[in-house]
Image (cartoon, rainbow, N blue to C red):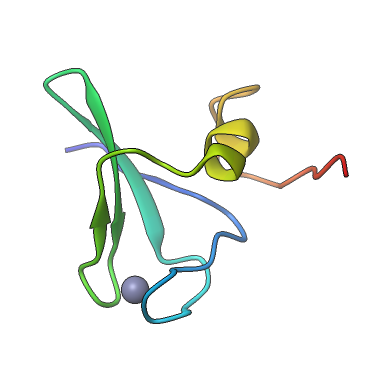
Length: 64
Ligand SMILES: [Zn+2]
């Protein structure tokens, strides 16, 4: 399965950085931490924002 890692994303469980991988399964996007295995079926809003505009994993541009 194709995985897209979310640059700069921090796992809410183990606090590891750059371990969050975005995958799509049956049309549902999931975020999985490859470090501790934490899974989220609904990526947090800020994660979606960072991934959606370019659908790439390189770089994060926070506009806050
Ligand atoms: Zn984790």
